[in-house]
Image 1 (tube, rainbow, N blue to C red):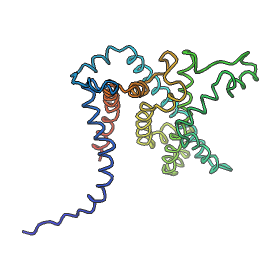
Image 2 (image 1 turned 90 degrees about the horizontal axis):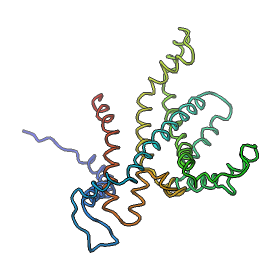
Image 3 (image 1 turned 45 degrees about the vertical axis):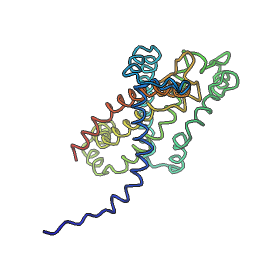
Image 4 (image 1 turned 90 degrees about the vertical axis):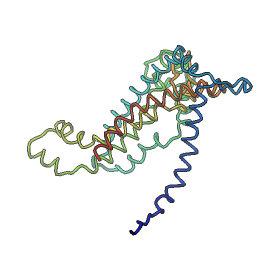
Length: 290
């Protein structure tokens, strides 16, 4: 009986990427799992010891953790939700024919292409209470008598960083949805015109259903990215004032910065589990359809 020849080239081509993912992702995750069950504080390396579920118990009794968890939900719901809304509107506008459309499309990508650290520093300057552009504009319009320290007040700080993440993420949704709009058959719209459908009816019954998969995957990706976002908040407020802008990812980062790796690893695993609960149902359904 002839043995079937196995082509090893596909495996060899995938091997470098697999090795990189293994060393960059899987090994650190496994190490984080082990550290989450230990008192792993590099300030006291001689006292590293196995704690069992003590870090998780401390985490669930930590009021700052629950504040950060609540802030994360608000951060994701308003951040991603409004990114999608404005991005969808921008995509519909960019899908129209007008002079200079190519330039406008290119310019609209600038917020997405700008590094998060630079965005944080730029918007920190915009919000500055003494020489910020926003305060200067509001005073000249007569809406304020004096500048507001947006990032130094608990009442305005979190809303300010949410506006920043919305500004950054709009182009991502706009470009992805625009790409989806390009492949919708024009014949469907022509048939709807013949039937006398309004623009709103065409949007509800043709555009949105045709973009279903694009919308789901882009929202899923942004939920994961925004939940893990650290750079913008860290550079604008550092999680303050009074933990008002502290999200789980920022709290994890701050704990890791002071070398409390055991506690930060337990919170990181919790965040990973929460994001997996969001991603797995969609991926499971996507593979079923195939």
